[in-house]
Image 1: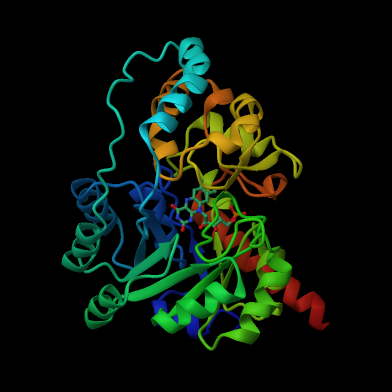
Image 2 (image 1 turned 180 degrees about the vertical axis):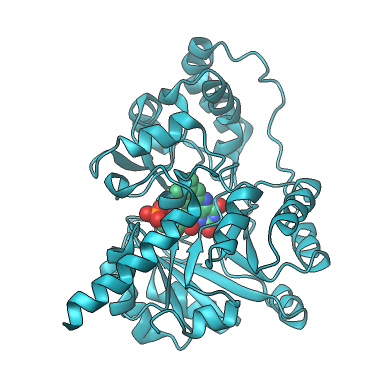
Length: 357
Ligand SMILES: Cc1cc2nc3c(=O)[nH]c(=O)nc-3n(C[C@H](O)[C@H](O)[C@H](O)COP(=O)(O)O)c2cc1C
């Protein structure tokens, strides 16, 4: 059977279909549990979660499924910046704050994410799978996770990053092509050099590493899954396809914008967070583009634009929200997660039959 392979066996799932951990509220416990209950691997996007938020979300997932699920977290970074840069960015963001009537903006820069505590929580809660982005997990943490029997998934945007992940001891690695929605996982080398399309990245990563490679970026249906398997990937990770699911916590406006978007609708932008990410172009990405050189590093820029994004979301103003999406929005669907997974499985089976007839 095409779906019985190292990835599905190692993760204890039926189909090697992973719902990407998407930080920022998309991956509700309902979505995660629904994907796991349908034979895939649901993943909580916990990158921005506090420890209590993470504990609560894990408990909610466990209430809804007994099957394996994952938690995705961010490898922390040490941003270099000064007050002067912060003040300048504050001025550049002022017109948006005025326009949106952002009142509650005096909280300053807070970075309350405690990576070590997030890891402790995963261990305490006996989470079966942990995936990382923005770097490879430190050796000590890898040892701890392995000792607890937690499966670890890394993220790479180049062959070199896949090799670094392998060296670090991860069980499998997601190869994220440039089509992918959301933030680039790049951590070694420049973002520009790491914009490798899924079709190029997967076979080269597969040839270079011994661990299983999971394809990500632009995959939305059975055709994409067959292509990924044909290129040597042992599974797929999909973000945009799951974002528009009925159980997803993405705002309706965001879902609708993706459902109506075209392949040319996205852009790679750092203006929201200080780190390149793919999303639908809007007024904020277009206007702020000219200030790319003045952006603060991640996660400081993310903090500075937080209130703007929040207020815009509350006002249903998609022109100032980050509308993360990959390059295949025409293939997105407004259905339940089990319907998406069932259709992928059916399409793969029919597609393989056609190819071998
Ligand atoms: C809204 C959104 C948020 C994302 N957040 C994360 C995240 O928190 N962690 C992560 O490893 N990847 C994240 N990603 C990237 C996915 O892991 C994956 O690489 C990407 O979705 C694949 O491309 P696709 O969107 O075309 O399926 C995000 C993607 C989207 C669309």
